[in-house]
Length: 312
Image 1 (tube, one colour):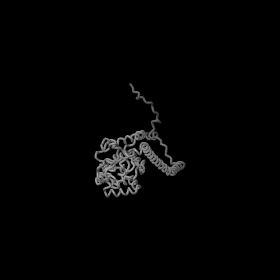
Image 2 (image 1 turned 90 degrees about the vertical axis):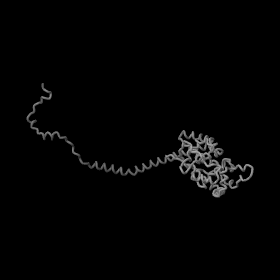
Image 3 (image 1 turned 135 degrees about the vertical axis):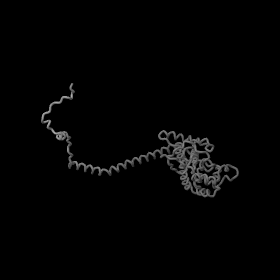
Image 4 (image 1 turned 120 degrees about the horizontal axis):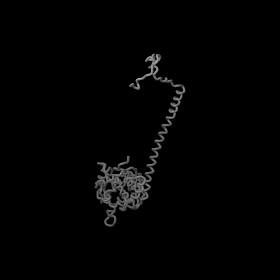
């Protein structure tokens, strides 16, 4: 039985005469020769190079313009966001509410300690409202909750920012300086350690020591104490932010026996007037309200930035 591959057709003589070298030449693939670029192609390439070179500066300018537009748009968004927060806060801040809101600032930021960078303006006060020193502040927090609930619907705002802005607006609405508060603080989300606030019974030496640990000089201590000019502690009108606090400290009405004058101010307020270093600034602010306003503004900004953790 023969295989299907066993039969081959006969070859003629001419075919048999084909050499192996000829066969290799015949089977070698033919690749077309590469031609050199024509004059037309060369001109086209040069034109394209020229167009790109000419357009490059304009492309760079366009890129810079786009980046600049993005930065400007982001800045406008931040400005509008800041203004939106301030507008909502202004809706809930009144002269009657101002003292409590300003006190809320001091009790949140006043926990700051420089040595370990703990405490400060971090919104922890909302977790500390049951502490004896924070008695009465629940009402101020509830006032700000109204503004926060509306703001959070669009973009969440931290308690630290909200309280800092509310204090500044409280000062302004009562006739004090306009204070521009930077925004972007983060909330701690838990209470600060206890015992960080200055006690009302401290004398001037104790106050200076406590404030020094928080990074504040005597001048700043006295300026910040001027916040007691509002709130019904006997230093002038309870809803007018002015330099009456310092004028009354110089008069020392509590020295009189009997009557309501003995109830004016806190022991820590009275102590300032008995300290020569503090007395220097009390006199300065009593004589020049503009200096007081400027120093209070600077000290307030420093206070609400103390210990703050910021958004990146």
